[in-house]
Length: 62
Image (cartoon, rainbow, N blue to C red; front, side):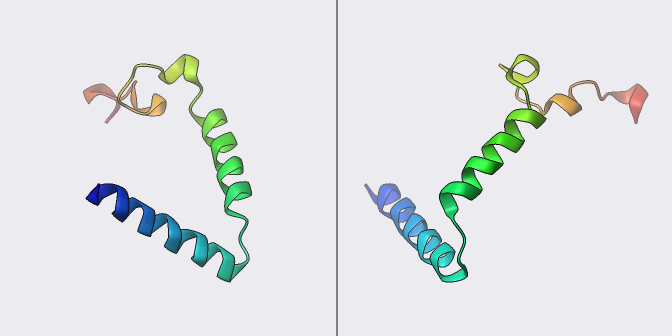
């Protein structure tokens, strides 16, 4: 319950901040989800803990 309250406080502050600066938070989130979808396609990243572009790094590439 305490964590839920803290998360709610953060959300409230974020909504108020976005309102103050004129940012459409829903649209910003939608756009970011699309960027992430293109940058991290599920067929390359599903089930992996690392970023897809890091999966090929190793001692030979450093």
